[in-house]
Length: 189
Image 1 (cartoon, rainbow, N blue to C red):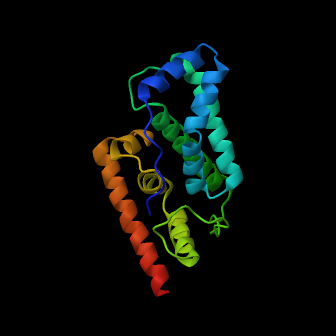
Image 2: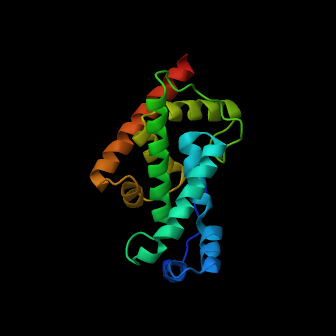
């Protein structure tokens, strides 16, 4: 269930680019976009299951990167982790809005596009996993997406969800149990 992890980046270089972006350098911003734009899109796709919404979330995360660049501080987890946190929070906001906008349960959606999950065999298994993932509470889904699809270390994933490491690990444990239960139920049913 592991996703493709991004290649390691030179954080000092990213921080230097952020200083340039903060000064209005569009070329530096373009370099950051080319390096980091795929992660917020993947997170949004996994959490929301909708290509259009995923694109909107990714664009909003990058817009916030541009707007917040003048206040960028070199400490912290870096640009990639910052974008992961922003994308996760935007997805959680959209998921909450979906619940408020409808009294009906959000319907299960079949994933029309093949997922990048090489570890999961056939399309039927991928659909079962997608359905089980969609059924998880939003924060549990975010924990699974950040950990298993985005390969974020627990500390970065915890920061993305604004949790301490112990709380995150507890959330992830509950998410794994719930995901396993749902997969067992669908295998038996």
